[in-house]
Length: 333
Image (cartoon, rainbow, N blue to C red; front, side, top):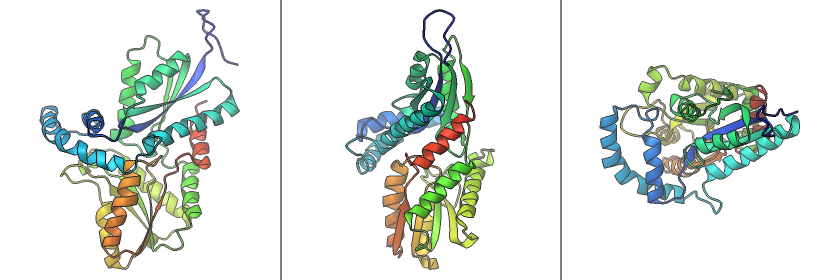
């Protein structure tokens, strides 16, 4: 049974669950993208350049030219409901809350917060605070840990709570890249696609990161390797049947390799003309999967001589995915 506060407010105590993701602009417009990119790219976890130098580059180059290009990309995937990432994340929130409440009771409250854009992490935590959450479990929806994603989320949560007089019991889940339920859900999504048997190779494409970040000790690359190997094992794939690549480079610095686009351009010349590709690091389909992988990289592969290209969607609100997320959270209930 839920407890009550000693101050006689009759406000029942709850357990708050905060699901977070990267974020999305409010609209597929140049002005909305400028606001979003300004917040996103100013995060020192995302761009690790000296602040004064980066401020000049950001304001006089990046925010002048990039917003219009990014707006066009978002326009190609925007639906009547809005940004796919936000729409899917909201469905994930509702589904996880339904599962947890059915098992543990109505005192479980699940909120959604985006690291950049809306709804913000601050607004989501405020919602949980208003529900008198005396315990909060934070699950960033990034299976593989990275300083630029999970680490930055921790910063945002800590910054908000630093202003609270009463800080609740806090559990921060930093990764779930090797969780059995995640690997099973990913493997089953491949099997259900029906594309594995007709493809020469299965490509696992992850968001990239600067090579210097990897050399500095960020475990992201190793987490991606582990997820990929476990998934390949689950599917019974030999070493010559799959590849791990990295997408979404930004700037001119070297990023971790192999690059997804360069790999897809080279594969047809090596006799690989039919592929299936998926993004195991993305919990929800978004710009990087729907526009970059499903559209842009398909064009690269076909232009290079490829014949068949199949994108396997992210797990999104798939029942197995919701069960997986709920199970990860339940360990702390």
